[in-house]
Length: 209
Image 1 (spheres, rainbow, N blue to C red):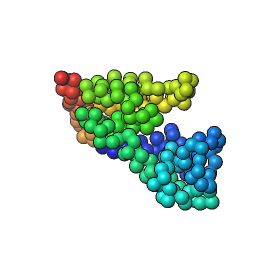
Image 2 (cartoon, helix red, strand yellow):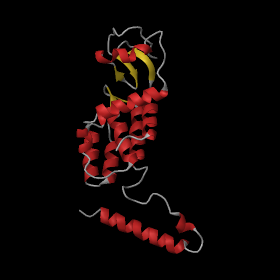
Image 3 (cartoon, rainbow, N blue to C red):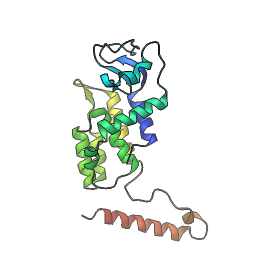
Image 4 (cartoon, rainbow, N blue to C red):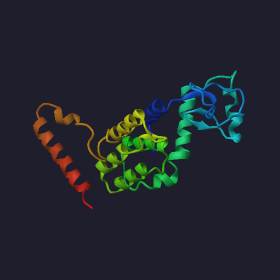
């Protein structure tokens, strides 16, 4: 499973993206474009992408006097970073049961901000493997909301968003929409009863050890 385009868009909005090379340690805000890779901190671009010496030629065109990265380029770079930093084979291997796209995206959204080994992410994955979706959702809601000891409203809102997004697609394997045959006249009531019974049976079976 890969993060969806929708998940990438949410992450871009939450993290913010800067389309040129800047120094993450110069204390400026808004971040100013720099003209060389000699920095106090790390030369950075896009959604917090640290530019290593081996990557300098790749991003040289985005130094001062150069061009901005396009949104498509920043999105592609973000996907690369997710694959390398977040959804590594070892991280994916921790999830032992099928999950929905929104569940996966929500995990990535929080792990990108907190780190893939954050306690909240590990707790959520453990709950997922027990198919305890409520506990997994609560673990994300209880993720870090402080920075340097100070509680930040932006992180409180982000954790609430991630918890809500986690269950956006419902539980894995559940019917997501009422089929057309249900609401066509002549079979609506019987169809709804059959659909309701199928959903109830699926829930009971999914809760069995």
